[in-house]
Image (cartoon, rainbow, N blue to C red):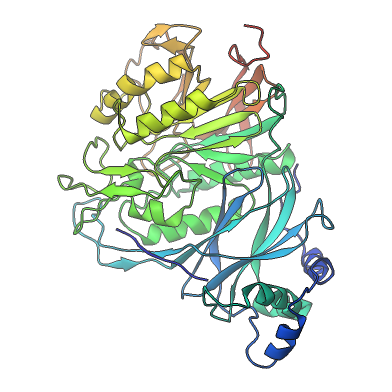
Length: 519
């Protein structure tokens, strides 16, 4: 299992150095030094907690709980340090004062993963991975942030911690910013939830992708998503249906994948991943599973993860997998963004009636108020309805569908997104294999561009009657735009080349189950 150690609209773009420096200079105005002045004066020359020279990398974002006031900023360093995030509000610089937030969740893992050829990799030890949770943010607001390490090693029980935070702010100068070359980015928090009983008609937009990997096609897909984010209304988050890096036991490929996404979007658009079979990554010695995925991400967890080794598994990323157990943590979780509840599930842990995942999901669905949260999306890697050939009748999918489909139908889930098949498909509304307006639509969005190539059809000559649209010819991504409580727009967009895209499938979706629909 991973070693875990504690240590002390469109504007979401990188900003020029001049703005960067003026924003940080505002820290000195926005933050007042309170009763700690005398203590701070006594510390001068003794060892100021200024920023160290430790380089930060692999920056990415995840919503916290609740998403409208919490964001987790994750970054890595090659050596242990006291991680911190410096944060500045663009929208409310006076009311929402600048702050320094120290991280208390630093993780590292060592593994001997199985590789694709069945051999065991040499021991790999990850960088130090810091998850800094920033709370008390303003809803729907834009923030700029910097990731850094403090040179002063804080003790958890140090009586001067709050004072040292003020001192750290006071020690930051424009000269220091240039010297330390701080890495950072920007993000916008989720919108404020509507008041209880008030129908939520807010507009919000998400990008959808899956099975990305790190090929030239992968890069093209991510660059097109980022460009649409910059040119349009801005995505609230990128929802990923699983199979992220295709490290497949070769852990350095996680590092290169994080470098890829950091250079394109991950410093400014939150990522909501679902675990796929390429995240299993069985350890060849301990038989632990999902360790890199659990360590490198910090999603809005319900409780700390629980894991049982896959003792019978001798593959790093088995497509069929009913061995071991991985619950809680990043395995399954939920977040609400304005009018949408997004439920991330795991095909590769127990899902039968009575399992942890089943009981949690039923509880979550029961609690949703369709006035304040009219749209419900599920994300799970393995598709329950599948027009493609490669992943038919897999054991874990059969178990999942048998238990979970009744919940999806009963509680009126609108859309279920999956990957696994490297292609695009949308179904008509369906329940238990029969066209039914009370059932969800199922969307396969596993055409992100990974190294395994395109899928093929199970029935090449004619699509099943429940298929609305299918395609195996292109890589691309999806966009769901919630227009109001009763209507949303869906677009599947293919990569034409590195510079252009084409909308291939467009639909206006009606939500019959929102409190504002009249049904």
